[in-house]
Length: 406
Image 1 (tube, rainbow, N blue to C red):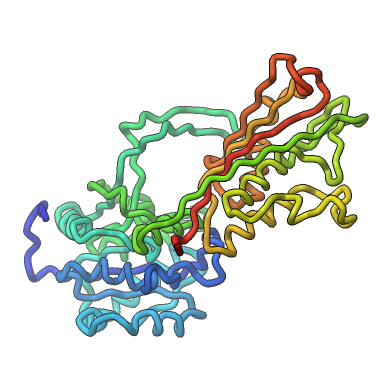
Image 2 (cartoon, helix red, strand yellow):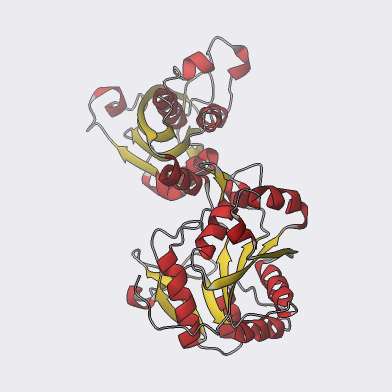
């Protein structure tokens, strides 16, 4: 472990673990920080990460008022060496800023206020001992410092109407992480002053320090130091800790003929057209193919076995119901959808202008990021029934991940 500098023994270090959020984006029925990851909660894994550096003498968790019983249960298995460094938890507020200030004020009135404070997200359980060391040393050297990693994607700045206004150079951008590290008096005073900033939303402690006029430095973060936010992040975290996962691929195919009408529904999006698709339900050929692809990956039959066309209740049904059911079957087996790819085959209507709307609708129905949904369109060069304009075909591939229980 390479140190930036040697921090004198007289310098006291405390860690503030922010754990008062509800974690709704993770799609769980409990706050994500209490999620079990290979036999231990995310919260206690984050506590262990901070405690790995023996210079961290105090660890204060800021929790939700409703979570005291969960907190007590979570820390019970921790070794006594770590428990002795845990300070009585403090209840957080409605915002990250309020929770952070509550924790700082609790440490300020303690018998031994620290010289250096590390502020860490409970949802980052993979911070390494080396990263914690860099945090402490950067705070001592710079006064205010945060970990960051280089941005790989090109970033665009837009106005409220979605028009690009600028493209910041990637060399100037960093994706920031925690623990964010400060001299304690700097951050405490900044938080107290920020109470006067009524119309500013501070998303992290560095923003508060910047607003208060302090120069905040960047030190090297870690790509592995992910923040667990979405169901996909939960799956990745469990995979790291729980061993192998079962990755499966399913293929779906569907065809519907045209009949008289004024629109087609493709991928959950109504598209004006001179015809409509004929079928027992709304004949959304795209969603039908995706649904079959998911069922195929699960090895659970096809759309017809789950929703028989002979059953009158599915007459004119919204195909979103079928796709949601397939997604629910993945979740029921502890799985997650990793990627969906849909190809629509037709001469008309033109799919290009509606591609992003279709991607967005599929992402919404499946509870995944739009970056995990591909939609393409092609023709058959006027060959076959699609080439003659008699209907539309669709092909889909679904990649899912299940617990490896074999």
